[in-house]
Length: 251
Ligand code: NAD
Ligand code: ZN
Image 1: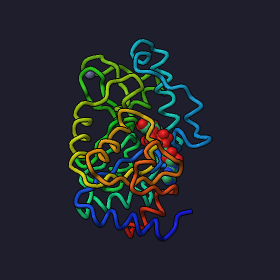
Image 2: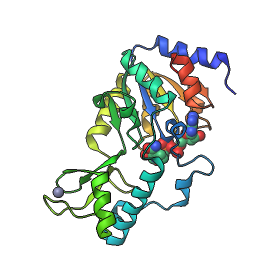
Image 3: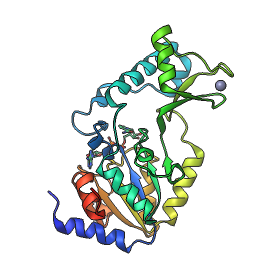
């Protein structure tokens, strides 16, 4: 259980900050019905990830990747931002938060109204696809129509390259620009607020640690303990919506 003191302490840290950076993980989207990886029973733990090399090398792996993606669409395609996303959006609009660094690929920060230029996606975005060779954008619904008709997603119209969701797969290089921007925003912040990340996936999880080492305050809201609880100024082991929502005054 969290207490009024926890909420007040979080509100006070936010109040005192000149410029905060928010770092989010899968935990901020569970209240929208999208399971995370590492909570007990998370369904994605039961599926072995398909590595980037396999995607490139094998038609079977590509087909399986797309089959999973379309199955996910049926389950989570209708997900909407929750109170936690709305509270983060409010902090951005108030000018308190300079940027939201997210590990999520679900597009829910954008859907909550945060301008895209304030969102740094470290692991990309699964709500659309791109050609791996020329970068041409493709929409999931169009690809699905083709997949259901032909049993496969076609190659790129422009260059015949492989089309893949705009996510960063296991074994795929991190996006250079996003990593650079995340570092800049982290170093410019005097408060880092971690929301719903187990902080075990590196290099993404390094940013809160960098912020703290650079002199920023560190607040963590996560149901389970994380590797950085020990060095944080405030840790709340509770749901994000109710705690951050109350601290920020957003329903
Ligand atoms: P994670 O699954 O490793 O950890 C999520 C953490 O959030 C857990 O420690 C859990 O205790 C906590 N949590 C869950 N619901 C919560 C809530 N309502 N309030 C507070 N805490 C809550 O997630 P991660 O650190 O983001 O790493 C997983 C990787 O998988 C990421 O890199 C991400 O790209 C990907 N992923 C993304 C999504 C998504 O986009 N929604 C979903 C699953 C996984
Ligand atoms: Zn192409």
